[in-house]
Image (cartoon, rainbow, N blue to C red; front, side, top):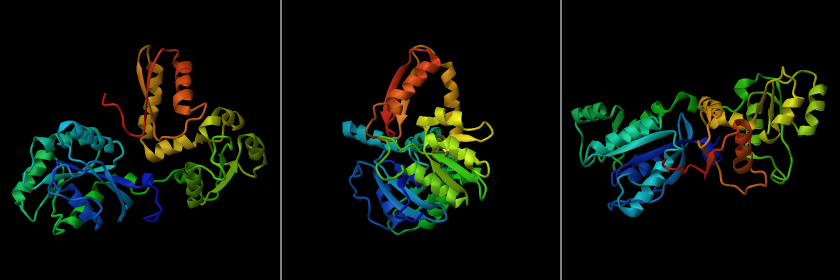
Length: 345
């Protein structure tokens, strides 16, 4: 995808983190070659996360996220700190900016530990090399103390920017360089049947984005996409000259589609494909298995990935609670959030 056409959710998210006045905004301006973040010697200039899309080869499209300092103080500072921590829930990699005039202290050590608990690859940056040039021994000492890769840079002169880009590229998990939705499950010439209900929840005149993306990925894999509505599936399968490699359905009609799909044809849903595409499917499977062990009074957090107008039979607020009740027979305490603003507990 091109720089301006790749959706933000398709891009690798790189969070720029550190204490106030470490030079995070200057660094992101230097990395992107644009004045996109306000720079000031006054601590706490950056208040809300700032997103900048760009191309970082050979990775491709990425989003840099400039954040408020995690050492912010006071009531407003605490709110800004929470917004910065929310960014960790959507980041794929973290760049920890270390103030060259301050060096590595307990704050940076705590930050690295926090990032490791989020399982984020971390690249360390010793900034302000134009003011304070760290000796090789100092850099080696910082590396030993933090246990991460470190690059010395100057956001003012541009020193070390290419080295930093290389370090970011090397830190990226290899599976994130090229992601696929479904084409690794099919072969050239395979039939793939997509069951896409057209009901009151469907957008007027178009398919929803995950369906469009799946069709495109099938075409990229040289597969043949066959799109049907639920009541057309059985007749379509019977009329095909060869058995389809896969049937993909909308979750809301999964039970009905499962009845009409022969046992020897693999069946999945758009939701499961995108759980694999955007998340950690193995961990999500573990979560599904944990349902069997729920007891009365257990807490369940239902996190919606997006904010939307809720339908009468909303999946997060209505269907999942109903299914949990039917499956477990337990009296559960349900909590709901939207986006990435999870409760602190």
